[in-house]
Amino acid sequence: MKVKTRIENSNKKHGSVKLRGARKRATPVRHRKFSPSWVVAHSKDAPGFKLELIGRIREGVKKSDWKQLIQYTDSSEKEFEHILPVSISSMQKKTIYGKETSERIYELAGLFGLGYEVFDSKEDFKRWLMTPSKTLGNKIPFELLDSSFGFEIVENEIIRIQYNVYS
Image 1 (tube, helix red, strand yellow):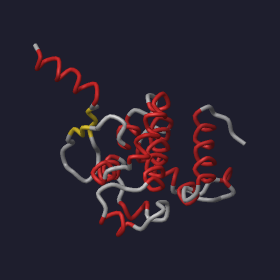
Image 2 (image 1 turned 60 degrees about the vertical axis):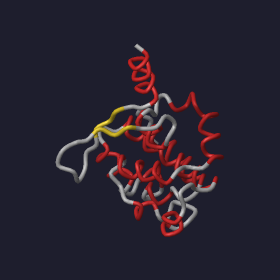
Image 3 (image 1 turned 90 degrees about the horizontal axis):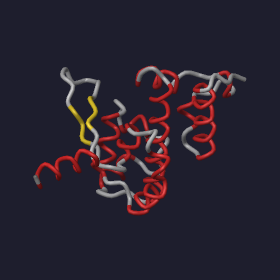
Image 4 (image 1 turned 45 degrees about the vertical axis):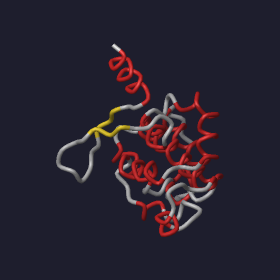
């Protein structure tokens, strides 16, 4: 019985999500609770855990959690190079990232979680992120993510799309 209980509790802490991407067969991904990839996969749950996320940001995001986020979003580190406050080569040398970098990683995770919720697929969301938007002054939303204000503008635009509020 004890083993069964541990397994049930373990399942509460880890979600199982199938990946799409370069691999021919989908493999389940285990997300550590409150990791950046967990935030993407559980975007509806994440708002209630913001105080926990603040603590995680202060502790720093682990390199393995960053790599898992990259994999889960079907992205590459290079794509996020202009968004992150440090270079990719600096990130590769560390095992735990600083507060500023960790905060940006969690902002990305939250944004991707919202985007995946609003758009039909990961591909549709990524396509929207890379397409100039008239409501954003013909700017590419992804290019605005290098600042907190840019994040806020892009997030607000996704919410407007979610509720069919067009300007």
